Image (tube, rainbow, N blue to C red; front, side, top):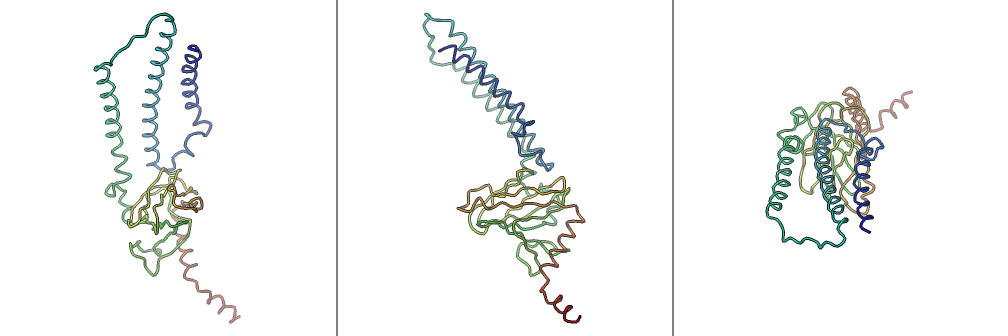
Amino acid sequence: MRWFWLTFFIVCPIAAVVFCVIAPGMDWWFPSEAGSPLGERIDSLFNLILYIVTGTFIGTQIALVYVLWKSSKKDDERAWFSHGSHNLEVIWTIVPAGILLFIALYQMDVWAEYRVVSKFPKEARKAPVAEVMARQFEWRIRYPEPGRILQIQQQPTDLYAVNELIVPAAKPVMIYLKTQDVQHSFFLPELRVKQDAVPGQIIPVWFEATEPGEYVLVCAELCGWGHYKMGARVVALAEEQFEAAMEELAEEQSDDGFADAGDSDDE
């Protein structure tokens, strides 16, 4: 039985490391490459923590295998009993504390850029692209009229959409995140953006889609029986296409249907 456990604790760590190495190439890791510059920095922080944890895991497994190997050779020798070692306790208290302090200090710039409004890109702060209102169970989007700046309060000329947020690509954009009812979570997995929508609060969120395309938007907070229905998308367009899309949306929402009818009557 001793040899079984010795083999088990040798094979399992090796298998775990092998699977971690091949996971990215087999698409078992992140849903995709980070689609934003901030997402790339977040991924690098994640990988740093992963390397630290992996090194700790391998070290503890080597120590465990060493103890099993050494003890398996002693059939008739009594086990050594110890009340503990103050030196060891100090070491394994200070070392993890030092590692955690290093991680905390190392990630401060990224965290500030992500969460502190004064650190947001200035161009994004000056012209928020939309307000995103979460509600059971959909995302309601409010845009300013083309040529205007989005206001906190609704304006008569504002434009509206549901479950589709259109933003310009390759530039920082900011939204105002709100919720109409319970707590929701605005989550763009491909852009590494996640922010809770808290009742009573207007929360600024910024991100940048590096490439034009469609990105998944989901609610990452269990918000009721229809939580599964809060699937939407973010469409990142080139600047000219974004402006054209806003103009088209403005025309659609200002069209009362009478102009076409009048033209047909004249004919």
